[in-house]
Image (cartoon, rainbow, N blue to C red):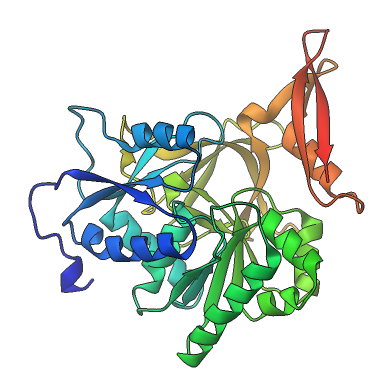
Length: 363
């Protein structure tokens, strides 16, 4: 820890609401805010300026501390959750958590690197990349459209090549962070996209499941894929390719006969809480709301092998269809494996019998 990272004040500074633009401007703004936040000189609450007006208003309310509440010691950044399973909440990231998570991830991946971001700036993966890169003052760049408009593989690759050139010129390895839908479109686009991705030390993919077929396609193209699992409350991915990073605890709460239950996570990367209350913990571990099981990592099922987390979807994704419980995420994965389908979404719709029927939207 450098002297500049030591907190300089005994009292917490007031929370500043900061509107963050998309793309490279947003990344540059966050890079400028991070040192002072880690030094205890300011607490910043992030609002994506690139979101629609109604969403911005909801997020601004979520990241604003409740009047009279006390933030956790060392509060540095308040980052909104995506709200993918409900209204967004403001997650309080502490300086200790941010530094600890950056160290653990660098240790697991062989050291720090330069970063190219496909994800929007106001996300835990983007903040994590900035925290990791600053330990060696490595460059961090973003795809120009991150958070703004639809995904354009051509501009992504052009911006990625510029970052790779800068990293290679400085003698640094480079990594990129994106989501599965972006990876799929890049591999389908041609024009040397796969070769560009293969130049990265690793390509971290998170934000949702990555199908086995997409992972196999990436491997065949020479892309060093790392499938990550985590959330804003864990400052992004803390499980890489099913294995917890050093210091990460994974437990399954109330497993069924197949070993499937709610995934619980613990470790130094856990957030200090929310702006409106503490994290939901079970046995001292974060209750993720996701379902999964732990299986031997070795192909032969050896009992002394490390345990790998196998995710099964969200806990609230199980619906009744024809009297049977059906996992919507599992159906979506099966549909997405069809060779004629590039992407899909499966949603439950109320049925006349009081249960549900499933409808698939496909590309």
